Length: 229
Image (cartoon, rainbow, N blue to C red; front, side, top):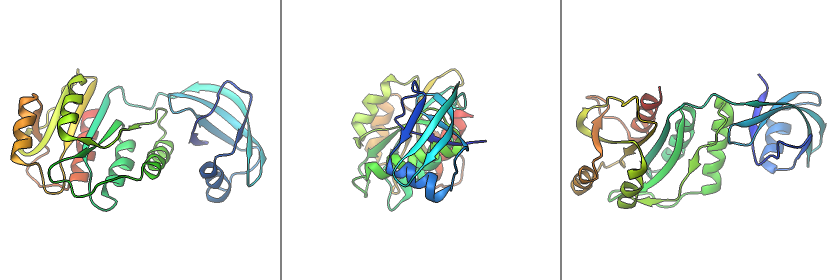
């Protein structure tokens, strides 16, 4: 299977010149690809083209486009992951693994017990893109801006179904008919009592993932996987 690269490519052209620094480094230094090797270029919206490397240099790579194709690897459901910002690199891990299991949108939550503040957006978007390339996805997940808990609850009203993960809730049973599903994951210290009450007022379904206590990042990936698969 040819290596896949997602970028702002004009797939209508017959020849594409790649100049983006990250892609150049990946193709030249990491993968050591050569002239006449086939690669797949994707626009991150489900459209992609099989191409052949024509010229290689440290500053640019020319790719001849051979045939168009539609990527059908992405799950049919749209999972919107409202996950509290987590300490250290744990939120970045959620972005990477969440992309691999089919999350469509990531909403970084600021909750009452959120400790970490601020994201390196460029780094986060690179993590998402590389995870999408590695897992064979055709549609690039969206990373939203940091969002306060109450604003996220209002945003979730446009979803067909919303799950509020909280220890003590009933075991998650996925609504198979819902096409756009939101899942809320709290911070390391858990939700505050008033946040649980507010979530109930917004009609979020309180669920758990079993009797064992999981780290927030583990719960985020398991819940997202179960909803999609």
